Length: 264
Image (cartoon, rainbow, N blue to C red; front, side, top):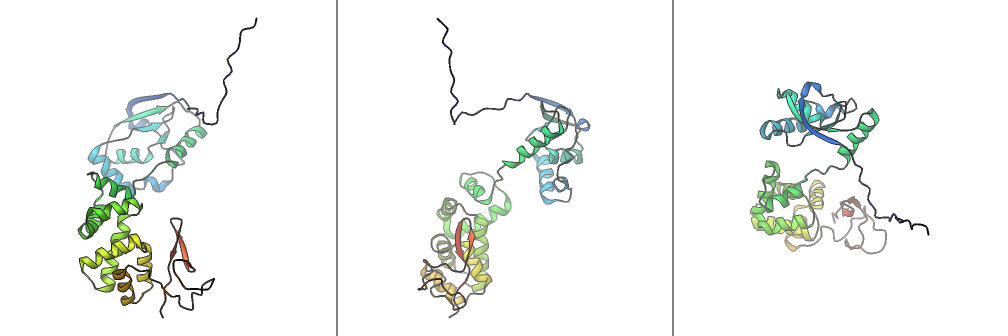
């Protein structure tokens, strides 16, 4: 009788992990090689983002080891290495990957950078609500909104996945455009941006010089900016209801945003 053989069936959700040898060690910076295909702007000393990275490393040290190939060519960390050189550091912690060929290490360079997720302003707002430290520029925008609507409005902005900076700019533009500095009015404006229109729509209307009285009326009564279309924005079908005929619109975050308004 023949021995039965075990048959393994690969299912669609089977995940194969690419096993690689990784060695952690400390080496002289002078032994490392920059990736020749790394865009120059990424290590430009005058670039604001690079200067911020350099300041971060000077203040906090190297938080993420540099990843290099077997021949010490950098896979991920060209900017960190440049910053360390400028700071006069002689030795650095690295993770050495068992890749040797030019093609392999550059493919890995692309892989290291294509799935990164920067912390945007909305995520910083969520961190702020959880008591975390955030960038000063975002903090200033958040505090302006909190002073107007409290943490309730901040949580609402997180829930709709929007940037608090956009709302803060909208409030600043509204202040300058209408001359209305009432906290109650600004609170109504935030409610309007969240429930009726959007921060983008408010800023667009101001940039298009919508009549002030029309804008104030819409915010105070929580109504759309457009109730009737001007003849230059002729609807595609009968009727002039904004909620059903956004005929003059652009795509913002996958949704139609109306940018026109009536002057009649």
